[in-house]
Image 1 (cartoon, rainbow, N blue to C red):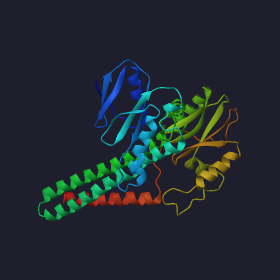
Image 2: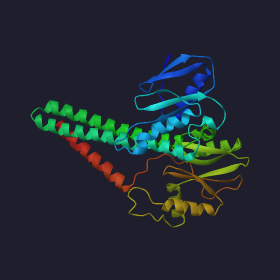
Image 3: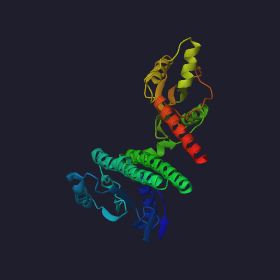
Image 4: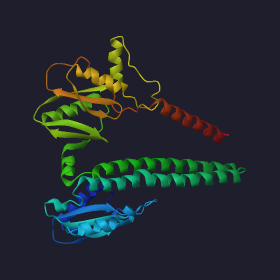
Length: 351
């Protein structure tokens, strides 16, 4: 049987392969990273793991011997190689034992090393290769523009092709780097940590502050309190105590300070929005009301909580936008330059 499936998460892919085995289908091969071949068997409990063994641009001895060392160790615990894909991701399988042997890597150091291999691949090697290809495309484009400078129609066509290819490459790099960050986080987890992650993590996106607050208050009613936020995931933990949640934003902080006849001390050198000033001011103000900071939502908001009380918070904000785009002076200048270049190109086309 063949199935076409695309996964961003390797751990979700692993879970799916284990579910297929429980239904009586065992993995035999993978093509193109998305075409899975299965053979029929009796329903069984199997565990799968995925590891990458590939030569980097500048390999060291550890890289060259990583595969041999890993195969020597895992074979002792009943793991067997099933197949590997075109990107040198190797798939391993064993009978589920329900103990520590079900962990492909049973210590944090080994899991971190695997996560680092994937991080380098997605955050360094692949973006670098795409940038190298873009450099070649740029040189070819410049050469063709000069060679065809008397043919306006072809030159304009080449320009649009070049702009489209460049935009696609930027989008691909951005997607690959986000993918790498997500993989790095997941691959550092043990099986137990992964199960807890699936149980107590929820990926949500809210446009308004009150939407997020209502969501958190509802979770509190069901015995879950917010523990943190990362990459779009809200992390919860079981907690019998109920909480009130309050959300502060930079805009709301400025408004409060203005009402007091004061203003936020902003660093004029903070072109890229990296200063801690507004966060520090918000946290200092929150301490006056016994509020504990538990999560930072991007660069736009801080979430606080305190044990449930009917007492209102003097600076509780309204229904503000939550996920707005935050840009620093450097980013703004870059966007303005891109806009100006776009206008120049547009005028040249119209001519």
